[in-house]
Image (cartoon, rainbow, N blue to C red; front, side, top):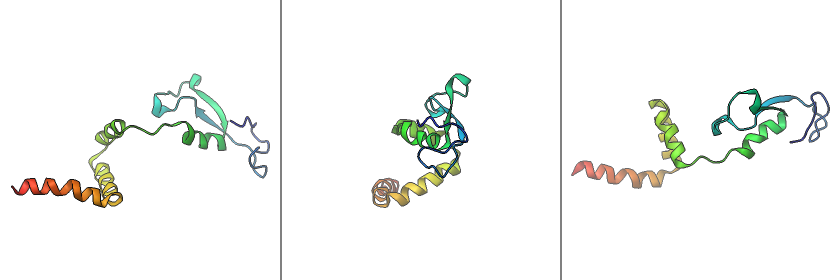
Length: 103
C-alpha cells in the first residue's frame, strides 16, 4: 500500500489528490466482517486494486454454491452466458441428454 495521506498528491499520479476509502483487511467474501478491527483506511487507487490482488479465484464448489443460491432468472442468465462462451462444449453436454430422452 502506498501510505498516502488524504488531500496530498497521489504518489502514483501526482496530478490527482489522494482520496481515502475504508477497506477490509480480510475481504467479506473470505469471511471478513465490517467490524472496526477488520477495517483500514486506504487510498482509492490501492483500495480498488486490492480486490484484484488479494482475492483468490473461487473453487468450482464455491461457484456452484453461489449459483444454487441465486434466483432462477439469474441462473438462466448465467446458463445463457456459459452456452455463448462455450458453444461446442455445450452441444456435447446437451446432445447426450436429448438423445437419452428420445429413447
